[in-house]
Length: 177
Image 1 (cartoon, one colour):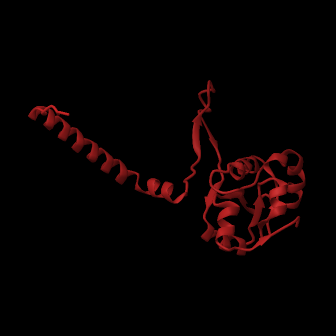
Image 2 (cartoon, rainbow, N blue to C red; image 1 turned 90 degrees about the horizontal axis):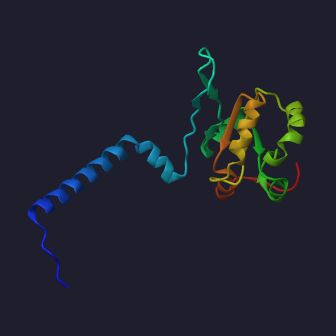
Image 3 (cartoon, rainbow, N blue to C red; image 1 turned 120 degrees about the vertical axis):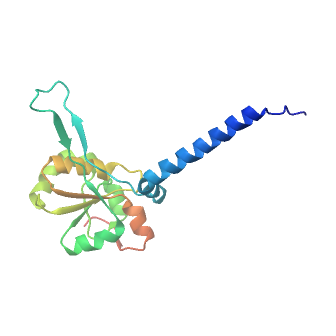
């Protein structure tokens, strides 16, 4: 198989393209270093998104939707010592099979029927730490948004959830508490 010789001009163009690609990659990586490192470790950064209101009067131009703040495993002990409450957003069968010690069950799928009872038992200024089945499970985040809309002010989401807690050898309970 014969290969065609590359002209010096074509070689120069390829080299310049390679240099530009490497330079762009380096600049992009350095500008987004923290975001990239969070992605590799499974952590995420959640920030409120400001969205313009469609066809709103000129005096109302921005609506801010609040999102629950993420929390890492090493922060949970401190918040629990300050009186935070663990809330399991998974379905009741998963909760019965095993949950974080001291957690109460508030499944996302039953929020409509359970929110009134939950609101009577838990004050709106109580710090809540929500969790579900780990990274990739949106239930705790979605439940957090609903609880914020219901008036809860201190809502945190433990994204590592039950799997990370269990894998770290933290205490787990079974059954209904």
